[in-house]
Amino acid sequence: MGFEIDHVISLRHGGISGAENLAFSCLYCNQNKAADIGTMLLPTETFIRFFNPRKDRWNDHFEISGSLILPKTDIGEATIKMLKLNDVERIIERQTWLDAGLYPHPDALKLIR
Image (cartoon, rainbow, N blue to C red):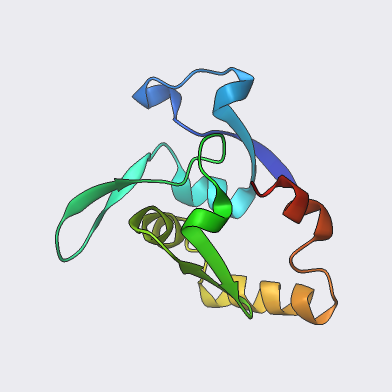
């Protein structure tokens, strides 16, 4: 699977095309995120922004349990919900990588702050 360049904060919401607002994203995540910057979490209907890889620490908002990505915070929950990180297809894909010893990828762990 290849990667696309994603605007962390979309141009529609005032984001810029500078390196500080760009991140690699898989096609699937980029399509699910689209121009959104957050979502409403129920039942409180509170607007929660997405995880920002330029400002947030991955380990503060997520944890890995087998082939699932679990939220630790509302930001993690909103991001998992909108990017559909735990859809069946994504879980199967991660489990395949896990079984092959490729998940999480050692190089990715270096990037997680």
